Image (cartoon, rainbow, N blue to C red; front, side, top):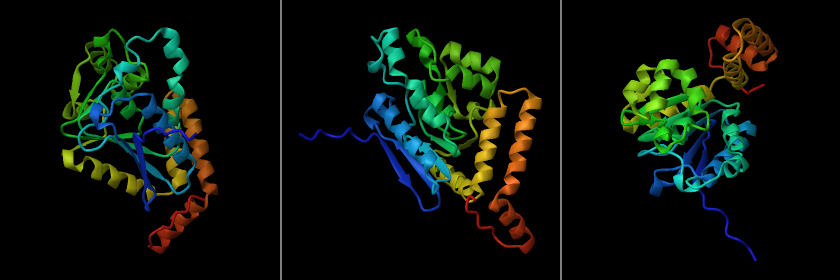
Length: 262
């Protein structure tokens, strides 16, 4: 007897310009992260990582809110072993290890797991009404999906401590000032601006784009000299790509380059 398929709570739209849009859609709970959302996000990102026709990704929760937090009902009475067995880190890794640039388009709340989800991305475009925060401490918990570690790397010790220890909400304007987001725009321009950035990146040579992302992320946790070696080797490797030759030829011939990811 056939069983009903799980409801679609994460939608995927791949556009002709090489941009994929991943949208969380649980409006009744302000897109709260539950197991179903995490699994569908992971499935989409694993698939997008392998698609040659996708060169940049926009992740959003829509026009009203990004992700208000984790679904508390799923863990309110859980035991440590329950939480261990869920191995949600494997689901998050599908996003953090995606080789394509990922841009978060954030309107409304990005709290707890929502803030952590945004910080898994490479750029964050936020609407003026966006609010970020790690309020787990108010539930007797702490961030558990990279919130402490990604936050301190993004904004430094003193701002990260303030945000995580007080559970305060950070307005978009403040988030921009402390380096927590990339850009702030009017609310109705959040998704269009993220799509514009993604389209711009998608038109660039994908091998170079992927190498830039890989080296920047890997090198950030290495000693400077080791990171410089990594950068230098990746730089040298790109001279074997057809796109590098095409870029140089287009520059001298004063024409638009045609990049194929080769």
